[in-house]
Image 1 (spheres, protein in one colour):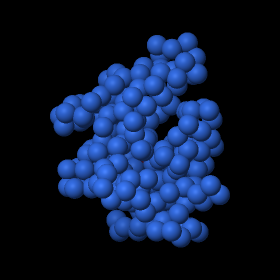
Image 2 (cartoon, protein in one colour):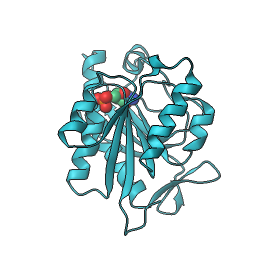
Image 3 (cartoon, helix red, strand yellow):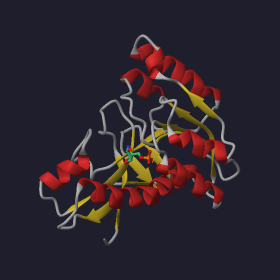
Length: 220
Ligand code: GRF
């Protein structure tokens, strides 16, 4: 937890376009009390690396294909992350499943964003699944990362309506725009020392247990 005198050091892990990374960079530029000290990608061609370079943020690539197994990949990933001494690790579209030993190293200081209203639709193809189920609302969730895939305690959710003529693409775009609101907010709370994961595995915000995730609802 950062005191009011220090800036939280954040390492962001990506695999792709990095629009959530961009939202975090923009929040930092606007004065949020954290500093992205490195961006790490498992995919050498991830566009998010360009976003980091534009802002002179150090980048690293740990290409999972270069390692014989998950353990050796994760061991190098941890080495690269720890080199930057982060107070928080932020998964922003990082598309590798992380093993329990890796996750345990960062318990309480690693966040993920998932494009569904968890616990609904863990895993992939969330927008398709929400449409197929006929849901009237959908969204995204920021959660602490635990060993259970997309199963860690949820901090904040953005809720958007599902519209009658939505396709997976239009729905995804509506959700993504709200991801860019809630992720910087959650990271800011953590940086301000207002948010933490208790030893009881519950989310604390401003000293209170968050019984249900904080919800931001937007129009269409
Ligand atoms: C987002 O939808 C996020 O919820 C999911 O992967 C996507 C990443 O998008 N985990 P981007 O790379 O931040 O643009």
